[in-house]
Length: 175
Image 1: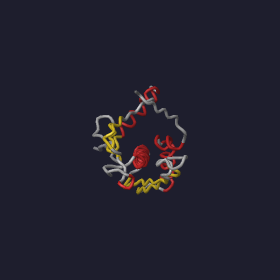
Image 2: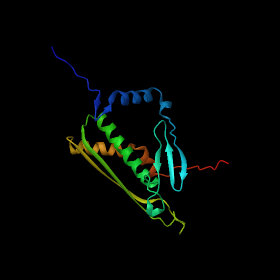
Image 3: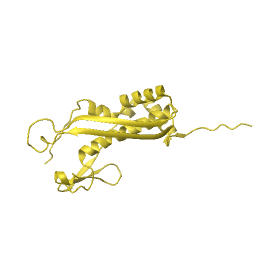
Image 4: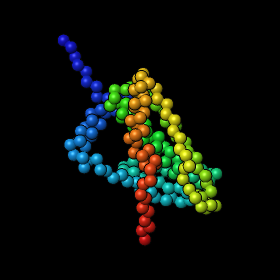
């Protein structure tokens, strides 16, 4: 008598949930059009809190060197973290769907920012001039499989795509 074991998780990813969502989107393409939301409340000085879904608010503050209280990461650090987190999700999801076991994954993200414009000292770009990402991925997969995985992740990252192109931004003041 033989037993067949069905794998329902790899890399701690619920394979059925991911496959189920993909299948539903194939059947009903309109399901893929989603809207995400965050509400930010100012808490004084440079502190604020972002409320997202039902999670505890995420604190934001500036480092003491920029006049803040250093109560949490600042917005540009959160942006770098969002990119790293999005890439980590992409590696986990795509590796799982390809049957690749991840032993360890670390995504290091850093960017160069000139504070002149932010501080009102000059006109120009207040944002990052350059963002660099270094991915450490430990797996028994072949180098070819890992390159294919890397290409898939970098070509499908929502945060990566958002940062790499011009996105219409509408900031309205409600009074």
